[in-house]
Amino acid sequence: MEMDNKKTRYSDEELQEFKELILEKLEKAKKDYELLKADVTNTEGNDIADTSPTFKILEEGASTLGKEEAGRLAQRQLKFIQHLQAALVRIENKTYGICRATGQLIPKERLRAVPHATLGIDQKNTNR
Image: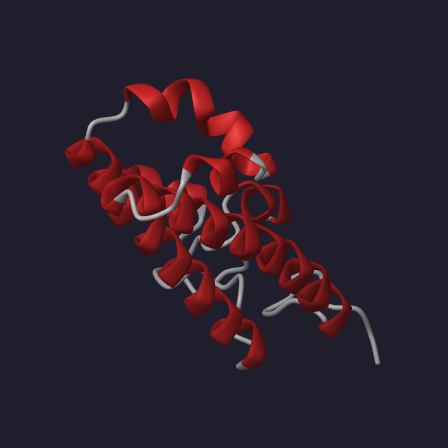
């Protein structure tokens, strides 16, 4: 099997690497989402939330968040989660990392920074 410089898709090993990255981000995103949701509904007692490591990071900001702001952040977080889940589906379909505009591979650096990207950086800039 000869190596093709113009690869059209990432190898299974590479896809696995991205999958782990996405699962990691997904787990954190879900935790953050739960915290924001709890912030909106205020159902959780602070004693529980205070022990959460993610909460410690959000704490300073979270105490000043209004319900609307927390609601907006929760919505954004939910969207992010959905994008990550869609990326996992693309990994399963082996279509992950392919620019939907050009069909070229999106550079790894970009995918590491934005693992749910569906456009290469050039396309993203021209689509703005």
